[in-house]
Length: 330
Ligand code: UT7
Image (tube, rainbow, N blue to C red):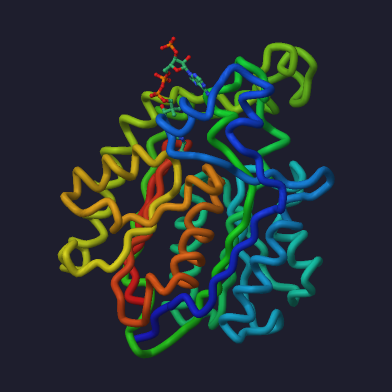
């Protein structure tokens, strides 16, 4: 039986570090509030003129090198982002050209924080069926130029940052890799975390009224997102474990979407596992949406927290609402 394993990972964060104190100088917030409510101490912002694909390229180069796979060997590009370079075409196409991939499929997926896991699931199906041998999955975001950095936007602006992560999935016959993936959505909560502008319902998709009303900013009902996240994370993690008859005590590491340190702490409490079982780097990068899981996974690999043979769970929850998990035997 062919299965898909992660043969290489990579990540890249833009150089500019933005501390909580820097944000407190431009909006009504404080290091104390941000640290206590989210666990975030700093995040990265792309330089002016640095786009989503610019961040993705070094992450992909690292992942290809680690996998010992060349651009010519990749059979499909899956690019997860909620902040693409342009409205159209997708960032996957731009990456194809930029890095000289073959004339292969390049697919953008827009399921926000769950994007990398949805991408992993698609890649897994292509490899499992023997259709492709190597698939690239990328999560990359430039959110810093899409945030309301005024007092009105403080509840979201302090959380989000920029970054990119990537993984190469490759075929193997040893039973290593993705054991199962589990995807979910619940669109009735769409407006709890959304951007209402550039809409098909508007007379003109891009219009001044939307901008004047601030509908182009990300709007979040933080409490509703939080309440759902702490239920869905444990639920989908348990679903992945049950599907493979694996007990949580056998899991080496859970790599969750980095939304809020308090969410991860509450998930650990509900799963009755030590907090350290859930990987965290939110204090350094904030929430990089589709990029958090591949960045965290790549860091965990570099830090030696994941080794061949380990059971690893990846899990995400976010706008849509969408949520997902994957169980991997590394
Ligand atoms: O990627 C997935 C998407 N995002 C998430 O998963 C986020 C989920 N939600 C959260 O992480 C939390 O709800 C937040 C961190 C966004 C907010 O924390 P909270 O404990 O739910 O705070 P709150 O929204 O209830 O706000 C408490 C107070 C309010 O003031 P009043 O009404 O009590 O006077 C807010 O206006 O904190 C105020 N506030 C702030 N104060 C300082 C909100 N944002 C800020 C801020 N700085 N940045």
